[in-house]
Length: 55
Image (tube, rainbow, N blue to C red; front, side, top):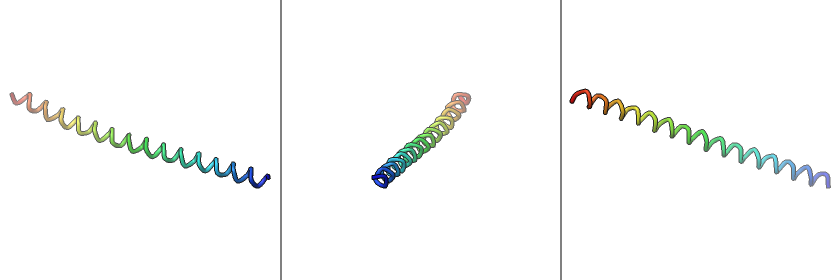
């Protein structure tokens, strides 16, 4: 019985680690995408500023 409890607790711990790793990976990926979008918006804003100054 003790071995079964030990096995179950190990499985729960590994499942928790897997869920945490997946969450962190998704969070990192979303942050990277957000930073890329911010960079693209800055480029567009600069281009619009230049275009407005040329008018």
